[in-house]
Length: 136
Image (cartoon, rainbow, N blue to C red; front, side, top):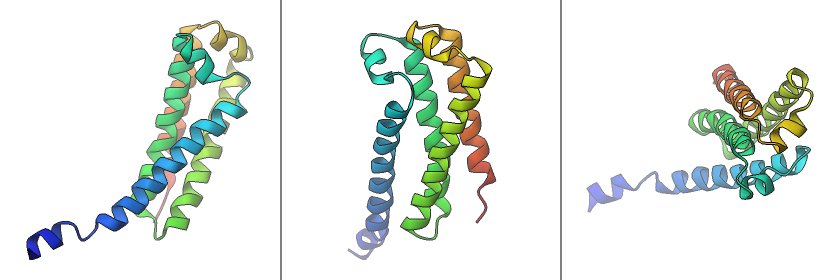
């Protein structure tokens, strides 16, 4: 019985952080979809691969630093602050992409894969740099 109790001793902290991270992920996808000039989800439902790539890259780019924040945060509030920073970083990645390819709105909507790949790569790169820049 003691081995079983020891096995599940951290389960409440796991549930708290994992649940909070999932809520943050849903909030991120919802807000990102709302803030970009096109509805990724609507485009994805129509089979748009570029929108799927772009949103998928943004999700991965957001989750990488959130995962690092879960690992090193001293509190749930600390983790949420780092998640907010990750969100802002993803908006910056989108803005950088829009500067590189001013017609992103049209090219994503028209399913130009090159635009989706570039936007996804920028989002993941920013997420990796964001996570690597976190210090404990």
